[in-house]
Image (cartoon, rainbow, N blue to C red; front, side, top):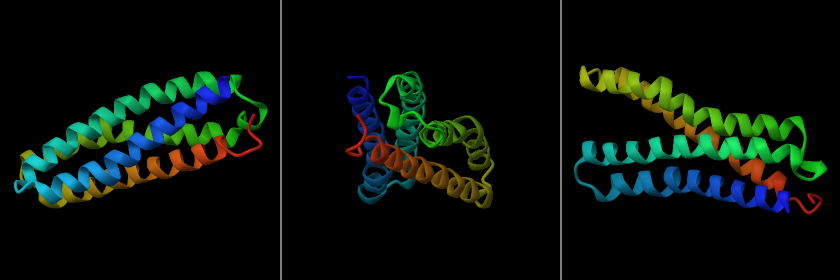
Length: 141
């Protein structure tokens, strides 16, 4: 029962990350003529995703020790840490600096930080996928 609940939460978490990063943000820039507005809306969704990931990561850390034995290993804990920490790091470290760079008109710094944010979210997408893959293997009970 716990393993199934964990699998559902991981699927929701990975799906939300992939939806925001792979569908919502690119679509906003494709259909919104005002790039600044598209960025503001995308930023809102990334902030929501960061805090949602922190909450879901917390639930995963509570459930992992109670799940089937194949899921209780250091690799899965490390994957969950990265999936949780990467977006939250973006939110609490990079976003404030990005906002200051944008406000001061420093597009070079903003662009570099934006690239770093994209890498963090890309890493979270990848680690969430790997964690979900590992949690749904047929030998996980």
